[in-house]
Image (cartoon, rainbow, N blue to C red):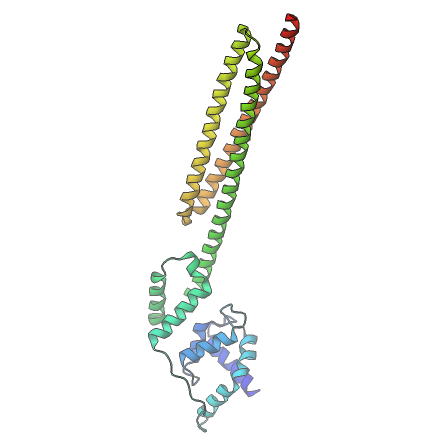
Amino acid sequence: LTVLGKAHEFFQICDVEGKGFITRQDMQRLHPELPLSLEELEKVFVTLDADGNGSLTPKEFTTGFSEFGKHVSCMMQQSEGETACPLKCKETVSDDEDEEFQFSNLMDRLGAKKVLDDDSDVKQLWLQLRKDEPHLLSNFEEFLVRIFSQLQEADDEKNELEWALKKKISAYDEEIQHLYEEMEQQIKKEKEQFLLKDTERFQSYSQDLKRKLLSKEQELEQLVQQQKRLEQQCTELLSGKEETKVENTRLKLTNQELLRHLEKTSHELSLAQQQLQVLQEEASKLHEEKE
């Protein structure tokens, strides 16, 4: 009970703001109260933080701290003038090594290496706050948690968008290739039929179909160019993390415009096929009339 009472008292010392939880920086406020170095307090915090979320609730702190009853009992004996603690504290690392360890641990916990190439600016600000404004350090770390969380979400969204764009571009390539092959086969078939007819009427129709085919090929070339622009936009998206949301909107509009072009091309292709069918019927009728 004494240990639990002291643990509750220590939690109140750490949580002077009344947040209802304490961070590793709050834990350092016990340094004047306990015969433990900053490094040992860091190890105690890591041990108590079983879920690894970077904070301790009163229950987690009180329950876990009972495992360190020997250290607490030793501290109580020293505060009451009794025998000194028989446990020998390990040699602590230097202040620089301690700061480096804490900052590296913070960056690993935030997953900063995934979204940040250079953390020197963040480290400089963190060290400055640790030195001049230690009471603001926990707020700064909470701010970093939110920022890196948003950056990670943006990076995930960017990767998802890139995958969707690549999938859409691949689908467009297959559709265009299919349309092109189908048109080639249809034109080849019509040409074979027209070779059997040497009238001016069917020659005129043949020239008209060639012009339509050229027009369709130009439209298909325009679609290919639009796809290349999409690929270029995808590449530019990789280097523009801050413009991800704006780029997403613009790409969605481009995709919609491309879909409309494809629908228009499909409709015109259907009309061309209908015209070819009419020509086939007329050719058959003319052949019957000649016979």
